[in-house]
Length: 110
Image (cartoon, rainbow, N blue to C red):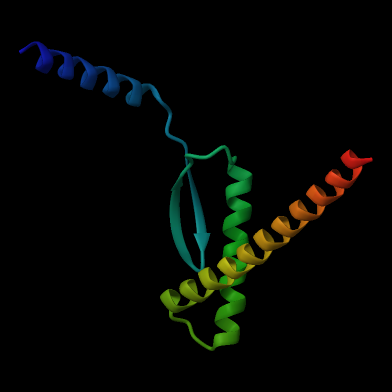
């Protein structure tokens, strides 16, 4: 009985917090589809719109090159291209980190 009362109290408190919290959403359009994005990141509205525009541009470029209008295929191809870009940037960052680490070691040895 005591634990169920405590659980009920927690649920009520959670509901109050959620109802008071302003859930911020933004509407964007990507590849002629409208999406409502719930902002759960530190990104602001302008940054989300810019990202959506970037994705839309990439999808249109890929669709033109692939001669397909199938949005699922275009989305998957776009995801693969973005994953490749991410991997290349990650590798460059790792290489730079190694380079800086070696340079720092040289400075500290002097």
